[in-house]
Every structure is written in structure tokens, then in C-alpha cells.
Image (spheres, rainbow, N blue to C red):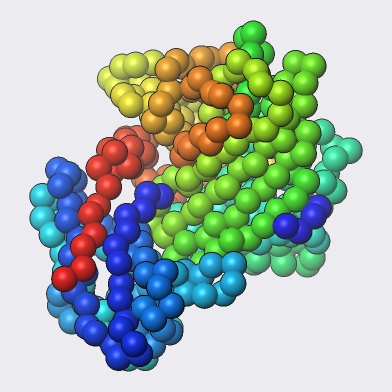
Length: 389
């Protein structure tokens, strides 16, 4: 380690170097159409059964479908992923044959950014994010998540950072989006923190990182926080974040190690002070109010909407945040946050989902964002099934 979605599986076989064409059958048992959803086709671990770099994936219309090869730490191919389209209560068929695949346009990206005070930034085709590293230690950073709005499916992280070198602030929209979100020492856009005795123990900067996958359709990385204070004890936090093409939310798998202690984990959202906000279970009341909004739904869904105001005091549409915590037991509004609580045992893994959206890209209304996050939660509970024939 350097210092400083929802997936389904199947078995793909190439026997003794002679390629056997495979039919990939994806089943959707839910009542929702599944469009552009990442599915994971895993190779056999047997050495004689391999996937090469020379395969072509096609849909039922004989159109080539982009895919991403997945490797292990030894750079051995473990399988491939792609974006599948399957109508509700239906199946879709894809074929894998030998051939030269076309180039794939990158829709996800992640990297450490030492030139900007050790940021770690990542993105997909819907939004971009960052978390804060050691070079910000003297500025009271948090382990919260920053959100960058984008209005293009092109990658913009490197573009935004390159602009800084030229004196072009990414707090101003220059055609591809901007940073109007403020984190400070908060959970930001879906961060996580231990919660004990009515106190939220927000962390600071990460200490190390590791990039596991880096696009074009999925990026995965791990951040490690060496010293997270909870009351009078210190814990080590490891968070692995996965971003997938087409997904409104990132997947986060978190674990804390240290002294055994009864605690809860809070997954939540900072409530900015642009306008008065509300926390409501009522959809009618939520959408009748055009200020800052927090909405809780069933099955651990928390959504938030507010006016997006840039550093230059320029109105920039509506800003959205969503958190999905499938085992949430309670919702709290406190200390400028709204968050979902879950019981946690130190040393175990905990998974939740978070992300942001913008009214100027894909989510024109508050209702569109709420629908996207709610449908995401339903899909998470009803994963696509993959079989090879």
C-alpha cells in the first residue's frame, strides 16, 4: 500500500487454449428495467481455464458491447465486467467469442492527487468526488466526501486539477461542471463516522491509499485512516470504495480495528445553511417546499436536495445527495447533519452506498433524484443473475 454497485457472477471457460463460444444469460426478476447495470463474469481459477485479451462481447442485436477485464494482484485475468440492459421480468443474452475488441471509452477513473495537497479523487459518468489526504493535516480536514458536479460523461478530474495550475478555479462552471460543495469538518456527501453516547466522531485525513481497479467501467480503491478517535480510544479505519459506470451511488465497505467497543456507525449528509431545511417522511410535503430538503424512504434510503450556490455566489441549479444503508435502524438529525445509524461490531465489515447528483445533468428535478436513489436500493436487494450456457 502506498503511503501518504452491486455485482453478480458467473463462470467463463476457455479450454486448453481453444476458445469455446459462450452464451451469457442475464435474468432480471425485479419489476424494474435494468439499463446499463454492471454485471461481473468471473473466470475459473484453474490455470487451464483462462480469459484472454482477445474476446469480443455482443448483445442480441449483434452489436459489440464494451467490457473491462478484471485482474488480480499478480496481473492475472480474473474475469470481465460490462453494462447490461435487461427489461423487467425478462432475460437478456450476450455472446462471448474470440476476436479483437474495440477500444472502450473510460467512464470511471480514480487517482491520488499529490499536486493538490494529497487529495484522492474519483469519478464516473454522473459525478466526481474526492477525499482529503495528509498534506491538509493543518487545515482540520475530515474524512467526509466532497462532491463535484459534472454535466458530461467525459472524465473531468484531471481537467479540473490541470485548470488550477493555469489559475482556473474549478469553483466556476467552464462548461463541464464545477465544485460548489462545501465539506469542512463534516461527513459531506455521504461520509461515515462512529457514533457513541449521542456523539458523532468525525475523522480527519486518510494516511494511505491503494488503487485496486482503475476503469474504464469500474474503479476501486482503498483509503486507510490510521487514527480515528472514538471517545478516549483510537481505531484504524479502512474504507474500500467502488464506483461503476452509470451508477448514482458509490459502494463503500468499511471496517474498524481496535479495542472491542459497543458503537454504532453513522452514514450521512451535512445540511448546509443556504436555506431552511426540513426532515420529513411525507413526499407531498417534501416536494411542496422548494428549499433545502431531506427525505427518508423505506429500507434505509436518505435523500437530500438544496440550492447549489458556487463560491462566486452564482446560482447553479439543484444539488443532490443520497445515502443507502440497507441495515439502518434509526435516523438522526443533529449537529448540522442527517444520518442513518446501524449497530456495529469492531473488526467486522460494513457496507453502505452514497453519491451525489445535479439538476443540470441527468436529474432535472428533486423527484428524479429521489427516484434514482430509491430504485438503486431496490436493485441492490434484487441483483441480476448471470448464467453461462
